[in-house]
Image 1 (cartoon, rainbow, N blue to C red):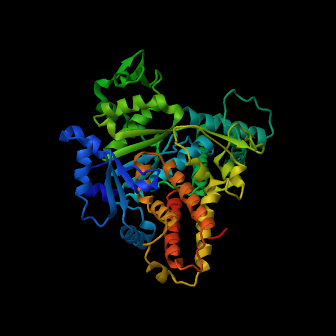
Image 2: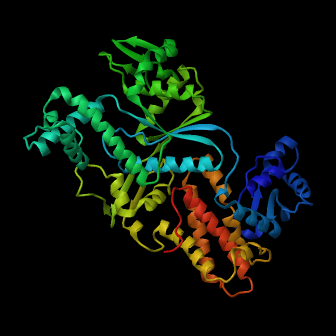
Image 3: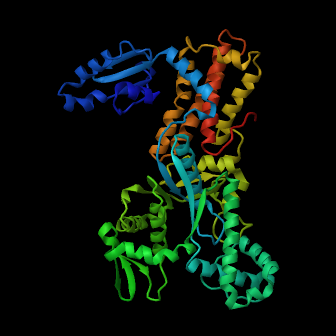
Length: 522
């Protein structure tokens, strides 16, 4: 609807939805922004714009109020738009945007299962992916596997020590830093079968064990993601990138220099607080070195835009990576980095802990087991990603309106129940007109038809919580309408059922864009 209005005005204007519906469905302050350009008062400009809508069938009223322009959509337009939306089915909200985007998210080290911090970035990234694809963008979802460096060596050592402890029952001197958790005990049992117990005591086989464990952990990660309905188009292994190191360093030219036996990048020239080491004195590349080669590979593929979703602790890393992209000869503005804040969990108001797990993290699989994948996806997408999120797992297990995913699903299921009680066929309902509805019905219809605007705004603002906010708001309006108005057996039954079909469509489509299948019964 908003897109049609913008086309009519031939301006990319700001549209607002007045809190007082008596002012109309939309309002715009465009006359104020045009005043300087046209050298006229906003009120004069507003009157001229209003006059241009005299013959528009899209509106029942277009009014100028102190320089603002208020638009009230006509009943016939809303009915036609509702019929068209129902014909589109799950394509409702789709658009024809163009552009190729490479979206990298999660990219957790393959040294252990995903924890709740990873889960938030995973849900955010996958929801953003679904929204973008609904709008028509060609988006590739990619996972960067950090399978090189110290963390992989430490995985091999940790697994050897776990094998000595849990398989060989030997006394072990645990180092200050090592990986721990139930998954390592399970891996040790698998390794014992695959390699024999000598693999735990032979230091020369630590690397072999580490690489095997890394692959098994990636299988765990992919399994955890699948349980949350998240999948990737491609995986890129850091360990396979370094064969291209010399060529990439040549592209960097004088932006890389040697000092104190190390190789540095001049990232301070691009907003970083200081230059950064990319190769240590012993010749080992740093984590940044792998990222430089990886981003060169990304940009050589010729995408129009690149989005990275990182944990909030990587904030200081943005400047150095953008510096590298620029030094490689690419437009660093094409690289967008979004940060995902950590999650705090409560259980009955107290910090959430899983006594059945060793280690000091809460796993993504723990939470899915506790509340289900749908609740996890909804709550993890329900707040702006760069702000902290805290929620109580017990609240998300309740089967009442305090649980947001239950509340939205119940709205959709309630509509299906009402439809099942009617003697009218879907064709009869579809053929009815939505003109002549009372104010509450008009308000519900208008909100249900706003889904395309919500999808567009949520994606382009990178604020996927706008979709969850919309679904909660639409559900609240539906529930209130149900309690306030009788539907079955009334003179307007067919009209109201058509209204409910549109509402159900927006609820169902919105949930699907979050990787959630709407429930038809509860």
